[in-house]
Length: 346
Image 1: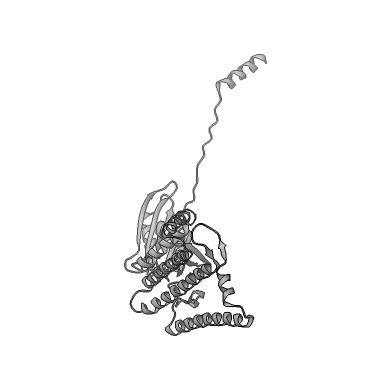
Image 2: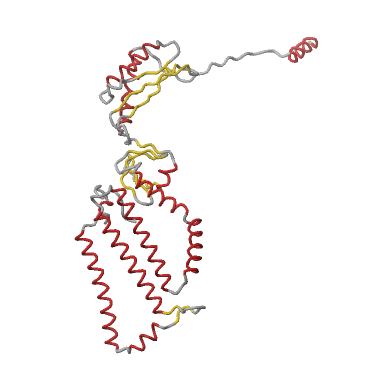
C-alpha cells in the first residue's frame, strides 16, 4: 500500500497517489476504459484477419481445464472469473480514490485514510469471492475454503494482520501523528510517515527506521510532542562527602537559571537525593520550552560543562568511586610450633 497520511511532506511519500484530484481520477478511468476497448478491438481484428470461425472460438472456450465432479472449469469460465476479479479490483480502486476526493473536507486525514482503506479491502474481498463463485464453486465449499484460508492466514500471517489492525487503531485514535517526536525502545526521532503496516521514524543521525505498527500499541511509547510542549530535563550530580550542601544547591540553581534555553517558570529545582557509597547525590531539574531531542542533548551538555566549571571555582569536588583496603598479617599457631622445633634442633 503506497498510501499514507502525510502527502504534504517533502519526501518520496509525497509523490504517491494518496491525494488524487478529480481530473487525475477521470484521466485514469478514461485510460483504463480505452485500454479495455483497445484489447477487445484487437482481439476482434485478429479473429477477422485469421478468419477463425465462431464455432472454433466456442470450442476453444468450452475446453475443459480441470476435470472434476460437478460443473466443469473450462477456459471460458476461467476467463470470465479473471474478468470479474479484474473489474472488481478496478472498481475498488476507483471507489477508494472517489472517497479520498469526497471526504477530503469532511473528515480528518487519518480517519479519511482508514475509511478509504477499509472500503477498499472490503471491495477487494468481495471481488475475490465473486471470482471464485464464477468458477462454479458452491457457497458451502467456498465457506470451507475461506475457513481453511483464515486459519492458515491466522497462523502464517499473524504478525502482518496484527500490524494491519494496529495501523487502523493509529489512524482512528491518532496517538502518534506525522511530525511528532517519539521514542520507541532504543529508537528516537521524528515520525515522517504512517502507513497501514508500519511507521517511518527518522533519527537524528539521518537514518529512516521502519517500525511495525504493533509496537506503537503494545510497547511503551514516549511521545514528546503530545500534550504540553514543555519537557523537564534531569541531571544527576554527585559531590564528595564534606561538601557544603547549601552551596552545592545554590551553584546548581544558578547554573540552570543562567542558561538561555531553560525556562524561568517553572523555575529550576535541586533535590538532595541522599547518601551514596562515595558521594552526596543531587538532581538538577530544569524545564525546556519544546520537545526537541537535539536541544535536550545540547542543553544537557551545556549544563554539565557549566556545573563542572562552577564546581571548580567553588572548590566543590566531584568524587570517583574508591575503596580502602586494610591488609592485616597474622602468625598462625602452626607456624609458631614449627619455629620452636627449629630452635630446639639448633
